[in-house]
Length: 83
Image (cartoon, rainbow, N blue to C red; front, side, top):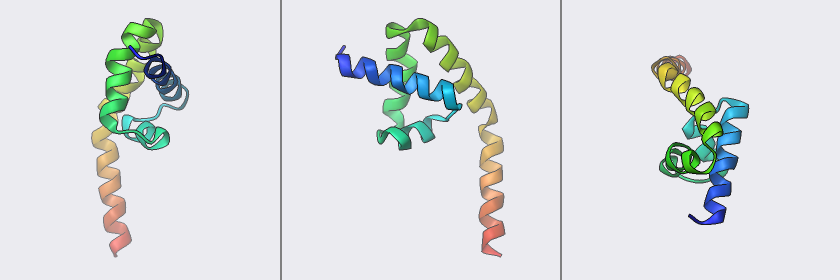
């Protein structure tokens, strides 16, 4: 693996762990695609830093469990602004 890709995976993992950010938010901050973020923190990070991977996986699982709530809130805000 390319060293810069490994470093990016570690930086992404640390960012998600520190902020609790979603994959979408991390992608915007790092100016890369959501697919790249997901690949880095799901596959590459597991090979580079297994301990960090486990911690990041917990944050991502929480975000996944809450995503339907966030979607409902966003939709509600959208329609409240239209009124």
